[in-house]
Length: 207
Image 1 (cartoon, one colour):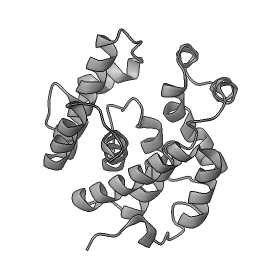
Image 2 (image 1 turned 180 degrees about the horizontal axis):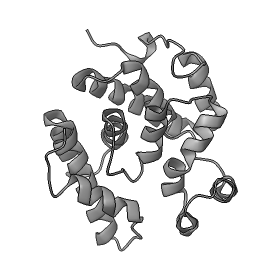
Image 3 (image 1 turned 120 degrees about the horizontal axis):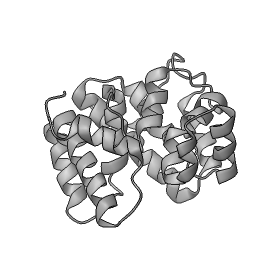
Image 4 (image 1 turned 90 degrees about the vertical axis):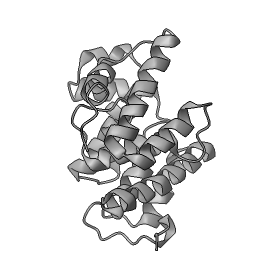
């Protein structure tokens, strides 16, 4: 029997907060629509964790916190990029990239989450990475295919691909769709997105 998100009891191994406490912090940090999105991502991440043999607790936590920094002021990200001496090229981008690539720092500091697997899942969920753990793949896909997502053709294809295979199916499909979307709309492509594409799309053998 599948566990729903409300039935999960945290062990304290990954965060000192209970799920109820973590949800409260997210509710305070996000607008209602964004908050509802993270709840759906958590639910989807749990389902994928059960299907592909990952920790349901880690999937729940990572799914909840992946967008924790999504609605912070740009000044917070710029300050963090400079303070932690991250790649200066990040300053040429914005929240769409920052809330994952930089946002994991806020998750670690403010939500007291130290587990590297969870933090990397948050860091990679926007642009992917050439080396993604199973948990990172799950959050990457859960964010993309959660039930509230609705973009013609693409999301249904991604859901079908993820059902067949997490890596060679879902991750490859999403990465290809994302890069195609950016190119077709003449949007800037963050360099890591291309690295992710080269790692996951041409040779679909990772699992």
